[in-house]
Image (tube, rainbow, N blue to C red; front, side):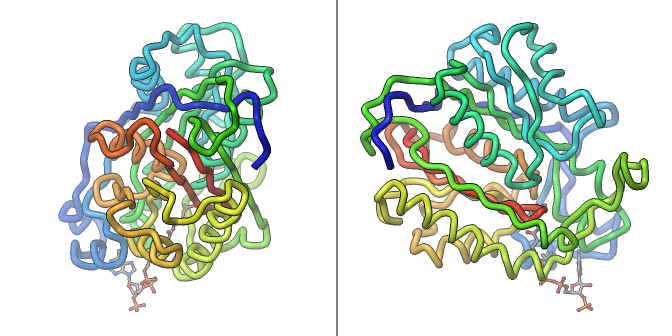
Length: 327
Ligand code: ACO
């Protein structure tokens, strides 16, 4: 960790969920599954599903507005909008430009970032580099998804796992002495390995089928790689910042599966009471899952100013990454 003059500090957090909740009991009426199987294998009890006409950019805009209100800022204060998503309203333009327009902003820059479930961590790292470079002052970093639209609702091996939603944080470039105790993004570590493409992908796209396609996953293969990959990037953050698991106040992992979360926490020696879990309520909302979990745990008073927070994710590609943030 180098001494720094500017850090990206978290000013606010917000989220948005579709109104409609689909419980495991309702899933039993859609595919041949049981509440018991879903809870035992994944920890998921329910997920939110977007209404007809309710799009990723609408959820992203609502989350952004909530984060701005939490930060005590107005949209005009933002000059960088990054939306992490794999489920844009349209192939183009970017969801981020739609959010920028919906918020009435005509300055700054807006773009989407695609790293599937790791998207939010990649977006935080990207925004951090813009802010630390001095090119931009304040960023809205948003994870927003409508994965329900990518699912084959006749495939029980995938459709029970995912949900829709959005979460956002406001990051602000702030003068910093670079101390471990000072607020802001302290370390980010990103990785990818495209050889794993076939283990988790969508079988459609503009340049191949000219359709949106459906999500396909070799669940066991993903599971097998997930724990090792996320613990690798978390340890890289530890080494970079000179901290150990004992220094972490809150571990906010990507919410794909309770068993992956527990196994990662155990491997790192992070006690379960320091782990934020929302997969039971939200399912896997891909790039939205971490900011949704951050919003829940800030709102309920768990994450407080001064806490050391580790976020991490692994997703299609494969992509994986972690970020260490002093709240
Ligand atoms: N209900 C009931 N039975 C089911 C269901 C279901 N919804 N889905 C699968 N089964 C059956 C299978 O058909 C299989 O039956 P069989 O033995 O008769 O063939 C049995 O359950 C076991 O299937 P597995 O796939 O081996 O089950 P596993 O224990 O591996 O659990 C799961 C599956 C939950 C998907 C697990 O592999 C997993 O969590 N993998 C990681 C997935 C993940 O996290 N993905 C997100 C990555 S993030 C991103 O980028 C999107």
